[in-house]
Each structure stands twice: as C-alpha cells, then as structure tokens.
Length: 121
Image (cartoon, rainbow, N blue to C red; front, side, top):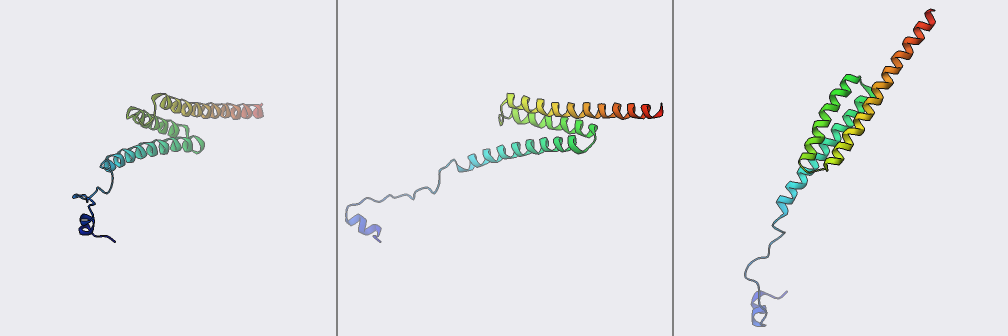
C-alpha cells in the first residue's frame, strides 16, 4: 500500500477532505418510501378486512368496514400515493361485491320464506 507521503513525492495529488459515504438524500428518500409503504399497507389491510367481512360476517359489519376502507382509500389518493381514478375503481369494485352480497342475502331470505309458506300450504 502506498502512503499519502509517497503519493505526494511521486507528484500524485491527494484529496484533503474525506469523501462522503453515501448520497446526502438517503434519509429523505427513506422517509418518503416509509410513508408510501405505510399508506399502501393500511389501504390493503382495509380492503382485506372488507372482503373478509363480506365473506364471513353480517352485512352491517361489512357496510361499516366498507365506509372505513373508503375513507382510507380516499386519504391515500389525496396524498398522491395512488391516482384518484384508481381509488374510485377500488371503491367501486368493493361496493359491487358488497351489493352482490346484500342482494344474495335478500334473495336467500325470500327463497327460504317462500319455501316455508309452500310447506305450510
């Protein structure tokens, strides 16, 4: 290994200040990425919760979860983490699934009621 004194005697200039270890923008980029991950994870968790409630729980619980998820999706879009059209599409598709569940539950209720009245007569 050649020392700095040997480099100077050979006519090679040596930097007088230490070189930086990393780019100066490392911390702000990490903060932005962490915020993006938080918003997206929160939104995905809310959507999963709605789908779980639609599949397994009562309709009232699913409606409550949908309202909460819609607020989170809108908040994510307002922070420019997703596009506003994507937010509208996600809410629309969730609402369509919820409506399908509500209508299937209502039809099942009327079919069972119709069967009961048919058995009585």
